[in-house]
Length: 157
Image (cartoon, rainbow, N blue to C red; front, side):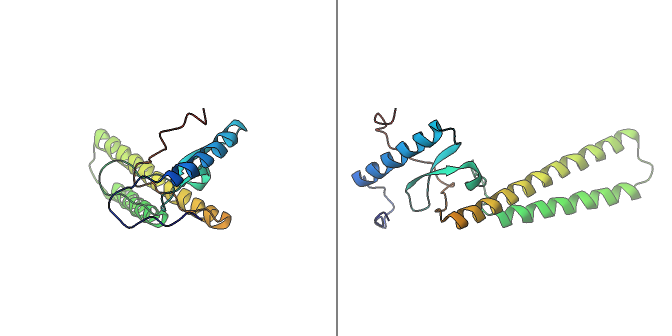
């Protein structure tokens, strides 16, 4: 078990962490050379870890508000499906619509359904990944902040 880092807003250089990172990077390289598909990601504790793709779930990146849980993704997906259903019901009650209006409604309907499917897919992927990590006793990956790899990787190349 790695030592607990000091509580501070600054990152301090830890030579022991570099040594632990090199061990993980060597094991990661061996697994990748053996044909496994793995990703190097820092955990929420700050340690480097080699995850299989199905153990990651989904990643949150970019600017703006983020949904970070599988339950949150499933909730947003459910809201999108409700919007799809509401638009579908509206399409039955619309009268005197032109062919262009119908085409636009169908396009919006299909677009909303695709977004709903995507959110549900991400939510289920995160749910499965969380179950796998729990069953295998793996730490939670830190997907909210940029990863800082060791800069001295001449030993693993």
